[in-house]
Length: 105
Image 1: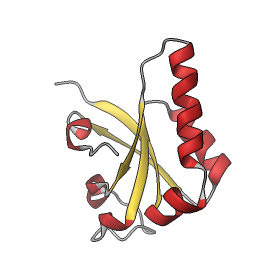
Image 2 (image 1 turned 120 degrees about the horizontal axis):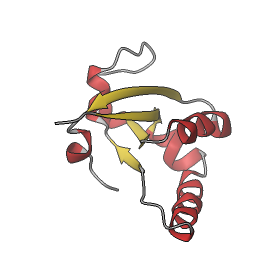
Image 3 (image 1 turned 30 degrees about the vertical axis):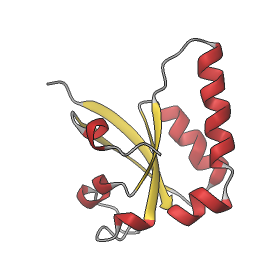
Image 4 (image 1 turned 90 degrees about the horizontal axis):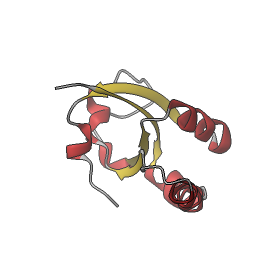
């Protein structure tokens, strides 16, 4: 099975859900994709269990329930999010099963 490369931003769940306009940003991007007839290639997830396998010092890997992430196949979108909202950790991973484990919210 082919592995996909995913890019992500991670921050505290409170920061992404309450302090930043993430809902608006993702709604606008979804609308843009619909207008250009492009498939959605990003997902907002809470409690991202994949952080347990990452090598990031600033993340408490034992408590994924405290975090939220935006995962995408589009590296430029993730880099743009880092610039747009700041105070997030960005990274990448390869997986052939990640999307099967995502809880959609």
